[in-house]
Image 1 (cartoon, rainbow, N blue to C red):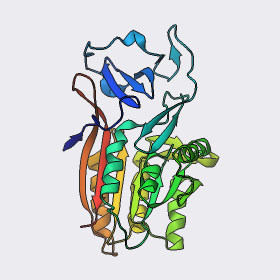
Image 2: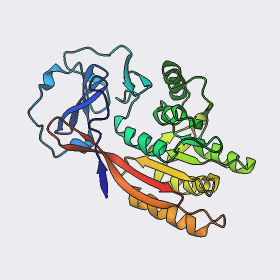
Image 3: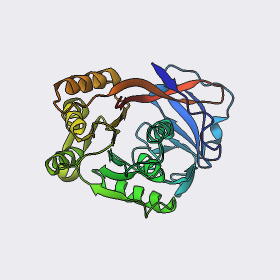
Length: 293
């Protein structure tokens, strides 16, 4: 299994992991220094190279500001290549950017070399603030971006405008991922690339409940049917303990064996990681990748 480090890819002014330990991480995001909870940092000692007291904002386990500093931060920005992200603190302690995903953006675009004989189509489920969508769109790929949260989709659209990508062929859909995929199957639509970053739990429009352990297998099976046989690319990422990357790989293998379409995927699994100033790697979740041979 490979661990992909994120060092050397982000401009220092946009993102740095400075230190982690004792269940927390210290990051510079677009010029703001944040001290946030991080379960993956449990059991580690801090590297001692950084003054944590200089954090602009410190959050508790609920994502709420603590300490004598400010209670909130104004909206600010971070840039990755030609993509600009508007950042803001959410009620859950997120800021609208998961920097470890950049290695997946690189992989996706490397698997779709220019020029194309026809426009490639991608489906991005649980698309959040649009990092993957914009990376694909910047590479000339048509994208359907789906998220059950209307504020998240609006945030992604603002990022597209800030990145000068608002005229690219992107469809913005506010809907439950499972319902949208089932409808696409009925319509006979197909995609070259399917990407998803599902949460462990959640609620969609009208209170539709999502439980990853219960609902992901059926969604994966449907998404495999959406993939074009010769150009298929699949990416699943997550942070869940169960299912983990091996469970997901097993589900995909079982589905492929049962399919009559002839779809085949070479699968690989691995861990994402962020590297601090001392060269230590902080685990940042898993990936499962599939590519038509």
